[in-house]
Image 1 (cartoon, rainbow, N blue to C red):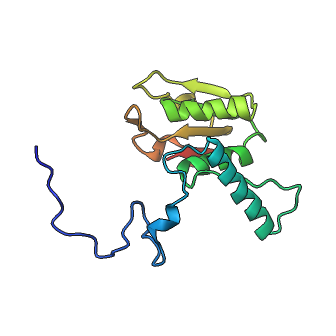
Image 2: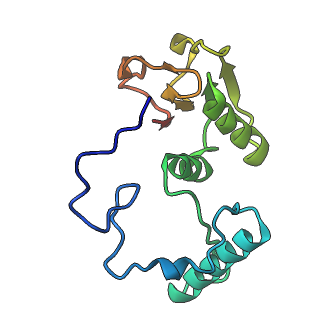
Image 3: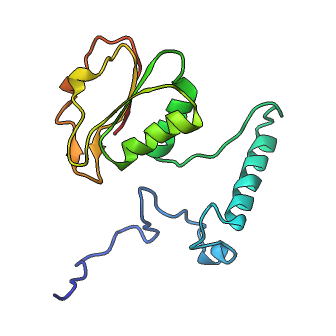
Length: 169
């Protein structure tokens, strides 16, 4: 099958992947020393992140006893920040039916060391939400992109609840 090229191009000559166009001052030569194709876990990536964190601390005059961190600018980053900032005051229920939910379970249990009530469904199945106590803090993934299993709607989340509901949507 032959690949067909689009009939038209974007009207903005600075078109870029993602939601943002490149700035008018963009020049590809600015990427000459960029560690393209390298992980943020590589030594060069770690050094760049440390420089960004140190620079942020200096520019914003953040006190030395405050922590500065960089997280993904995505739903993943938002869920991580919510879990690290908000969980622990009350009982936590972790709900997982695919790999992302399982990752959140691991973070809460192994990193945050919270004794959570864990509810897991087999691959391709979903946890019975009638077994979840929403007076506790509850963390789950709405759409299991790896398995295709998702909540059909928000009706399973009670409007009247005492706990936080952190949903990776």
